[in-house]
Length: 186
Length: 244
Image (tube, rainbow over all chains, first blue to last red):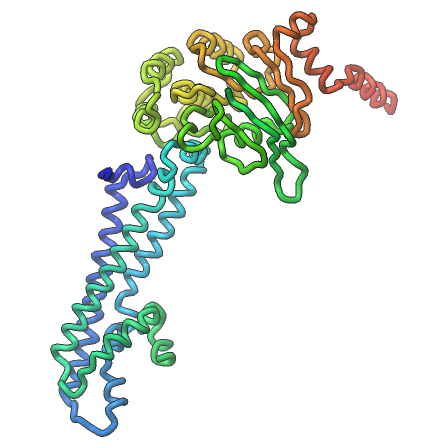
């Protein structure tokens, strides 16, 4: 299998390293933002569970202290992964701008479309954006698992419920809309 | 042999841009493709290159045109197909990477002949230089069939003349040129065949040798084919001056 070089995965006029640096910076900032948001969230959760006394109304208690809730940034009411969403949106915009670049000032699109390698144009427009989106998805998954581990470790036995991870995954898409809607819908 | 059979290209809500065009272009010919603006010259070329969807069949040496043989066609257009932000040197590398038959020696020789800078972005070239570079790329890709669509639009007459001479000097017997232009008189000396399009249809297709035997020049042939009314200008002027 051919090993691609970075300059073969972006339009010929693009400085691939510069774009990769920018996307990595976005990913790093998103990770930091997520960790900060989770630290804040889990701090509140920690405070609440200190006063936890098992009661008959477990549903209410679980709802108050569920894992899904910790994945929301309490201050701004959005998912702590929102940075990754911005990076993914930026990646989509990047793909569009790459494609449009082949029709600006000249019609190099004609050249790209008649190259012997039929995937050349698609690869140069989509490779970097798709890799970025993939890394965003992977980062969200890994961070979710890490955060759940932390959540699990500090949650009292009576509130522990693996179903919460399942719920969080089922309602994952809701993490990308403002928190006020999330509680309304769940 | 490039063979077009019943090529029709239509745009939604419009008349056919190209209608039932059938042509055979053997290797080694220089063919002029003529027609008024909107006659379908560019559309036909883009159909051949696979840039437009069309009805009918196009084959190259009996095989349908696809990714396996598309590199045997190259294209120079006044719209330009180079990357403006890259230098000539970058283009040389790009073409050498993607077209196995790329003619590096020819590229260097033509760049030198036209005194084009190799380390300057093509976007900063003058229009004439851009056209020259566009044609250089098409001639150096290593294609057997070189399609040129108004390649000299914006070039001065000396520039064009230089190019015709170079073109005739460097072409190998297997290389074929399909040249679309309005500059009938300029190209009449070196084309071997003239195809005339009118409203998307082939209205005439003659070899220059036949025309010579008939004692006709290209311009006369074109005028006849289009039923050009030589007196229409005089009539119009008469009407206009009569009104005053």
